[in-house]
Length: 357
Ligand SMILES: Cc1cc2nc3c(=O)[nH]c(=O)nc-3n(C[C@H](O)[C@H](O)[C@H](O)COP(=O)(O)OP(=O)(O)OC[C@H]3O[C@@H](n4cnc5c(N)ncnc54)[C@H](O)[C@@H]3O)c2cc1C
Image (cartoon, rainbow, N blue to C red; front, side, top):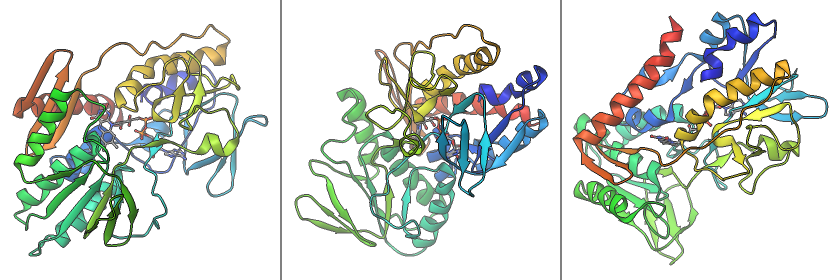
């Protein structure tokens, strides 16, 4: 986002800049579950990438980058054409593996890409219109908790028939988090009738049902996949060195360990020195370093190392205007936690949306 906001500084120095992305807008995932629950409109949570890029004199190409040839310094796009580069920055994020599911299954959605949550919202409202349905959320991390709480909010506020909402959490719900955070999130969801199934994994998914490792089957009218994310596969597909998770392996300068002209940040990288959680907090902390290093690489100046920093503020939007917040020893549950998250997220978006004017 910082580099996008400052593209004009590259152009003022005489460089040509091309931005490649599959949509004219970039959606902020931190507010995605809130959009699903109708706290936010799509316009509240998106940044007009194409407009801001072109306004600064750079070129925007609406496409997906599918492969890189690091020796020839060429990126290949999904339509087959290619774009040459001297220096490149990858910020292509992560995706939810869809197992063997077809892309067009109308009642199976992933928590990413964020823009698809809007289609999921419409489908849920259609299915809960006068009918009791059953919704399963596969995965037991924060995105699963946030999606569950916001489906509850969506249906509740729309006055539709509340579905059975069930989280299939795998071994343990929110297992990466301390017990006090875990139990508060769980209690908040269970208080509203959201069921959490743990102790076993989902073995297979069919159009209208899932089967667990115990052999037990559950029929579901709607499924959300929230089983964790994987870095964009572009690097693996291009034979560029990756970390164990498939992310672009980068050194302390956010630079490919094999190709000095390749940089990257956010969910699509593997920070070799210290593997990082896939949270937006790191993408945001990397922002200024990435910008500085792209500029330095073009002018032959020294690169700046990225320091991941310490503990970060965690806030989950659990729907119903409530949340759970944790920062070091501070733990908050309820309306105030959500109000703080809402204020931080809106401020973040406003800062970048101001560039659109
Ligand atoms: C539901 C949900 C809620 C979350 N909530 C929070 C939160 O509250 N706080 C927090 O810190 N983290 C949160 N996270 C994690 C956070 O979203 C990510 O860590 C963060 O978005 C990573 O930023 P990024 O820029 O790397 O990727 P993204 O934000 O995913 O952006 C990637 C961009 O690349 C584009 N792209 C994808 N493929 C290609 C391609 N092949 N070619 C070109 N462009 C491509 C995408 O369209 C997108 O615009 C949440 C995640 C999810 C799924």
